[in-house]
Image (cartoon, rainbow, N blue to C red; front, side, top):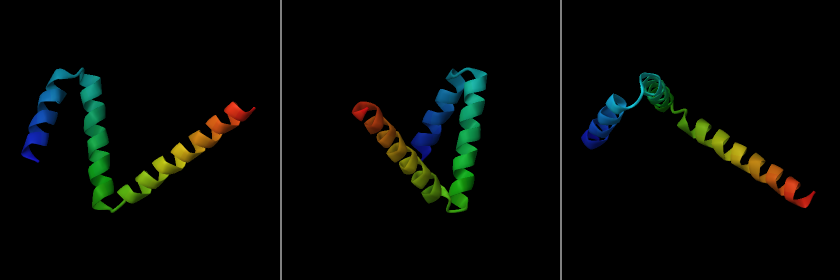
Length: 63
């Protein structure tokens, strides 16, 4: 975990301030979801969206 923190710290210092702030916000959201056991729900929504995208792609190909 220490290596991950060091890598993230190094990257945040290199990125543009707005990008670094966005990353900080995303990480805080992930931590909050993990604290609430909400990551499974997020993963489910991602999978659901991927399935919908595949269905749309299939419809376009078959049209």
